[in-house]
Length: 292
Ligand code: NAP
Image (cartoon, rainbow, N blue to C red; front, side, top):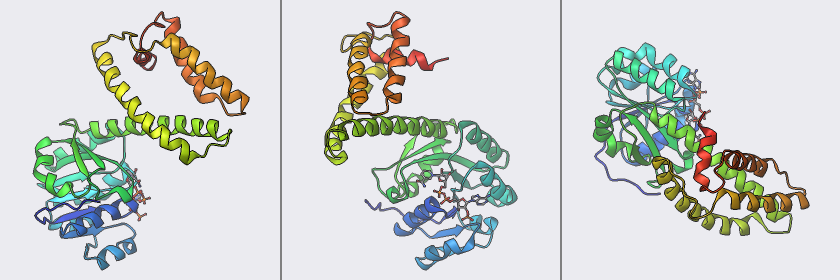
């Protein structure tokens, strides 16, 4: 954990579930006067014991601060909570760290603009124990000047990543990055089951697989340039070669009674590229399969 040195500014946190509580705790730890509100009022008790000020309504919670964070279950809950307090929010900066879709984020930004409220949408790329750690990323989109103005306070939560003016981008990245996480988890769990069938512990395998992920991310940086250029030279490893390689993974899994749905999905994607005449291209060509 790294603690930031910032000038204390008053902040408000609306929503004190697991994540909202961690956000409020990080502000308190950094010395920011922190006002909190939650639908179930008793969840604020531990924060109040650590120095937070309890508000009895959302309008009261936002009254004395310029920076208001909201982190509740979903966007309908955000609107339900904030609509009655819209006038109290006028002229302030609302940072919505609730998870939602890009469309919901853009609609929320429009609602805020209609009420004269500055708006930043956010995606928290960690779990509550990672809040307060500068290694954790928090994605922001919306008015970049608002993020710049409030960066010192927001940086106590995690490293603020500015995605630009389109308020929907934090949610869009968030959804894509979670998809990436689930795909990585799936591959790692499948591989752990495979090697585990021959007695290798998950911990031993993961020492090696975590190093492999660094190499894979290096491949991705090169493939990203290919995708942006629309050219997929198979000068490192072709899809044809990988169709043969994945056959060994499938065979090893079958021999050990390991479920083969995940590698079969990858084989399907590779075969569709081969059938389209791209077997000699790099793996990045498979992006075509995802573009409808
Ligand atoms: P949580 O512990 O279940 O807390 C949910 C919060 O939403 C509580 O404060 C709850 O109030 C409030 N809430 C739900 N419906 C409400 C309504 N209709 N009106 C008013 N308040 C309502 O969830 P969480 O883990 O803190 O997650 C909160 C948000 O952070 C979600 O959008 C989640 O996707 C996002 N997030 C969470 C994580 C994580 O690791 N936990 C990571 C990234 C993003 P009550 O206490 O009164 O029920």
